Structure formats: C-alpha cells, structure tokens
Length: 482
Image 1 (tube, one colour):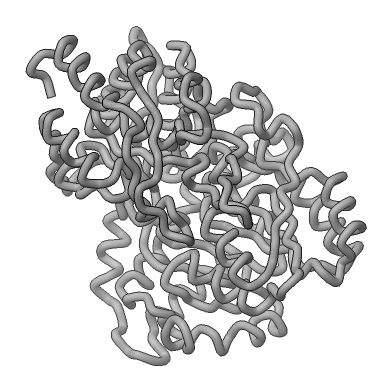
Image 2: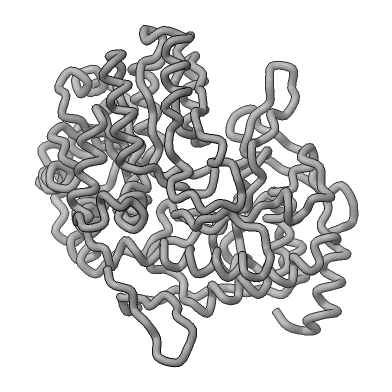
C-alpha cells in the first residue's frame, strides 16, 4: 500500500473505510471512575463497560466487522451437521491459509486445549519464541514446560530491530540437543509475540526454524492469531518480500508450519477459531476432541453466523488497506508517545501500543505490580481501559513466590477499524499528563488471587492512598473536565 502524504499538515494515518454504524461510549466523571476501579479490585478486566470510555483491553472479539461480513451472516445454514456455512469456511481456510483439514473451535484457547491434550505429555518441553498466558496454562495443565528462545534484543524496550519476535536458532538447537527430540512434541511460533509488545518474526527466521524442525523430526506449530499483521510487517520490513502480495506472504508462513491454529476473534475480526493442517494423521489425532469439548465437526461450538463472518474475514485479511489500519494507528501512537519521552516498546508492533511500566514508574518495585498499577492509574484519569502485561500476568513458583515477568507492560490494544484519530490523541494526552505526575502512582497487592490465570479475575488493592492523591491532582489541573 502506498503512503498517503498530506500537503500542509503533519502526516497521519488515513482511514480507508467509512463509519456507518456507531456505538455510544461512556465517559463518566473521575469520582465514579475511582469507585469503579475500587469495585473492580484495581483489575481493569473486572470493569463494567458502562464505566469505560475507550476500551483498549484487547483486540480479541472487539474488532469492527465489514459490511460484507454482516451481510454474509444472513445466509447462514443453521444445520447441526453438514452445514454449508462450514463448507464456505473450509474453502476460505484452504484458499487463504493453504490447509485442507479444518477443525472449528469456539476460540483460540479451545484450539490450545485440543492441541495440548493431544500432543503434550508429562515431561514434554515446548520451545517457543515467546509464550502466551493461556498457551502456557494449557501446556502446564498437561504436564509440560516451555522454553522461550529469543535473541537478547527482543527484550530491549527501545530498539530499531524489525523482527524482535524471531526465534533464537542457536538456542533452539541447544534446547533440542539438551532435552532430546523425543521430549519435544512440537516447536511453537507465535505471530506476533503478544506479551513482548506484539513483535513479528521474519519469514527468513521461520525458514530456519523449519529447517531445524525437519532435521530433528519435530512438528512446527504456528499460532496464527495475528498472522495478518505479521504478514503486513514482513511486507514493510523484510526486503526479500516487499514486492510480494499479502496472499503470498500468508501462504508462505502457513506452508512452513505442520499445524496452524488461530483465534478468529483476531485473525478474521469475527468470533470462533480453528485448527488446520494438511496432514491427515495430525487431524485424525485431534478430531475426536472437537465433539467432546466443542460441538460437532461442522460448527465447533460457533454460531453458524459467525462461521460465515469468519470465512469472509479470512479473505479480507488479504486486503492490505484493511489489515494496515490497526498497525498504522499503533505506529502513530507509539511514535508520538516516544517523541514525548514516554517509555514505549519500539519499533511499533501489532495489536496495540505497549507502555513500559518499569521506566514509567521506576519507584514501584516489581513485587508491587507496576504494570497493574499503571493500568489502574490510566483508567482512573482517563476512562481508558488498558491491560496489564507484566508480573500479574505471570504465575507463582512451587514455593508461592511470584515469577517476575521479563517486562512490565501496559498494553493499549487498538482493535481494527474501531477508534478515531481524535480518540488516539486523547489517549496520548492523558498518558502525557500521567507521566508528568507519575510519582503519585503507587503499588498494588493481591487481596483475592485465583490459582490459574489470576490476571483475569484477581482482586488487588493499593498499598497506600495514592489513588485519592492522583484524583486530587487531576481535579486541580483539569477542574470539572471529564
């Protein structure tokens, strides 16, 4: 896609779509926001959307669907078995992802459940470029462990490296040699690495991983939930693929994998998910688990209307003007914040902008969850709901101690075709004010902690009266402003 230059104003992302259906937002006063975050246990996951202005928690299931997707939903075939809606989805998967066998599931973590139940055994080791929270939980639930095999630059906050999501090839070989290929059911690559800032991997790197997998006879599994955006950044940043189409790039990545799974809440801006492969033996091993845990093989626990929307959404992933919108907004936000001196992950990735809470709040120790505190503080002074991606999203060791996260991030997701540029600028403005008053933010501690995936429903409380002091400063500077 060619860049669009402006004549006399600063270049900015230009939406290549128009808005025809709108949804009312709520920007409640700051005193209500204080009550809301207290009621939510200082966990943005637990906020009610009636108290949220801009919902940047996630891009999962929050993307805007196209007119063609909505139209397709009206022709859904409601059959329990043998649905024509499924046949259209199956064809879309074959056309876009190049895989002939498809198992539909209700979302991405359902795919993880089936894959891990099938292939992960006690003592299994899963090499990955970086874990995702639910993936790790499913692997551990089935007795496995992970090894994160990144290059050192991947965890650098400020960087110009275009592919921080690359798997470290030398470490991959060492991992296989150390544990033995028999203990490694598959190698997992995530497009793009969610927990370290939505950073992509290159096709050259995936080719190298494929070569190692073939040498040792190990299956390569691709989490394709953010595959479209990874492909877009490959086209932007990898010289060998600049002239190729999105279709070519997507097919190359999926062809390199034995097994591909995805959340359609991301990949096709719909709902549901899928597991696909060209290997009948892999399909047969997983097939029986779909009726057991999801639904019949031609709907997999998904509404057939969502199946239709998914099929159309997969084809739309090939449209560069569509897939570029979210990354271009992320780039604008990240580069603007960076120019203001606010610590963010660079280069801009996909899914959202990522603020480095460790540098934003260096006075808060990791044991008091700086990313969680920053997410709560941002909501308090703006109504913007981001997500903690730090130690709260981690787990405890066998002795009950926190396993400290590699990075403490607040993720500000930018769903596809949802926000306007003025809303993005509002987020930037409020983050700038918060950064100037960052010394007022304090830590958090758990008061209710689930044993699994605690970041979803855990409850926390502040370690001091810092929320009240932050509110007082906001009122002093903004008066009666929302």
